[in-house]
Length: 400
Image (cartoon, rainbow, N blue to C red; front, side):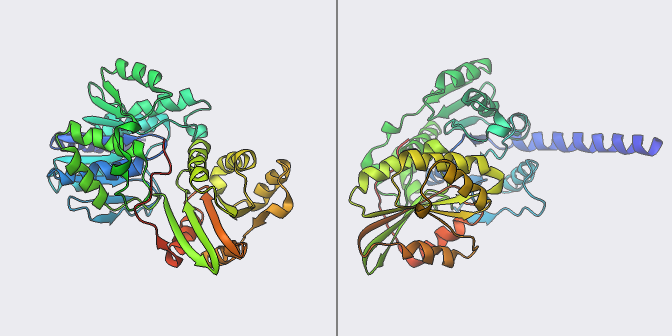
């Protein structure tokens, strides 16, 4: 018993020393920006960091998106190794690493999902001077609660106490404002219309107006002029999950692969589809590729319901995990058997070839890829990218 007691005391002492050390490190970093929200966190983190770097501020950032990365003060990317899986303790090591470079600003994407861990990330690990919230969507319901109110309150756990915060959220803004008032935090909403179409046209990939508007508001708040910040954002490398369109030619048919895999909640996916539908009304064939993940199966079913109710597909291709269960739900939703295809192979090349087989002899074929980046989705998207030329200077087709 004495040994156990002494070990416990030693561990508590160690944790206290490490905690105090971390708090001292935080105090040496003047500006700490914490980015949270349902969709767009990685993109907004990158955009803010790029805009601030362009404005001459020594800025380091860390994303927790499709491929976790540290982005250094020169915009170079450093992979974040995770030999033991995802753990919020990672943020302590990241802050320590960044501090060695004496940054003026750090921008951290929140990596927690559980409400209590979100609170710990903000109030113990980051203690942000500027909070950023992209939006609040019905997602991660198992971790954050069954309703949009639960999710919004959970996200508000990263509001900085006595601080400044920005959001592009509109529907749930009144609840967020009430939560901010409890912490004496000034929360400002940034509208998408703050960004002009011609400003969006200079991105080499498809970015959301809301993300850019939010990042610009933060940059301007920290003293970086709008044009300077935008120039930095145009030059920055996008997140691996950024939405792109890849075009290739099969005989007399134009094939457009639209990677919307990162927008994996139903509301965002439907928004993107409606924008695509308006732009590509002249299509002659529509294939929807749904990539499923075993650990997010409920989301896959929600997306399947969206497809059945709102997307007039000619073919529905299933890749990923739990495919038999997805097919059972497709039958339950009365989707015709001749309209869906299972691709059990894990080979991106085989998935590519099977999808391209259904291209009509002439006209325009759209391949709308949805679901998840993980479980093989990113690999298929990358294979299409290898076969095609990225369409640059696309219009903003996915407004929030």
